[in-house]
Length: 154
Image (cartoon, rainbow, N blue to C red; front, top):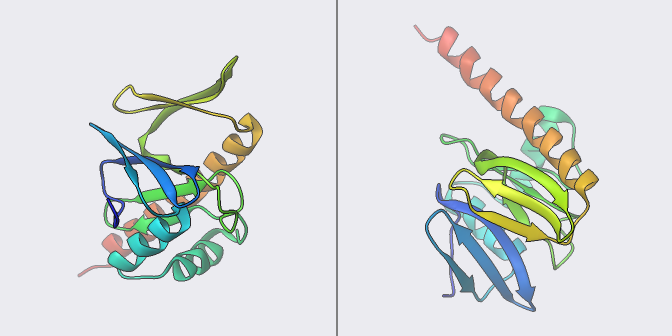
């Protein structure tokens, strides 16, 4: 598969090797010949903005400008966060909205998603915790803005 847009079924995107990523969805997983950054950029463009524009939006909303969680699609609150700097070529992106829990075990950092699927990464628990906190702040700010719009509609 060449092109892939993040959607409501996307759980995570993990680099496998140069220009090959593993995409995990609710009911399947598959390889895409691309990079995580390119998939993020194309998905943001598909939903009407650039990755850089989404990054600036995150900065405006919560003041975060490095390793920013990104609102890929606003109406369904699709928020993804990187596990390291997004300029790093081997960066994994996780869908914040689909995580049920995460924990460290002997195999690495485990993410459990809403479909009960578990994915194990060789990553820092502290980094994941920090990114989830930032994503929570972003989701809260987005929800606050949506609720404010609803209150002021005539």
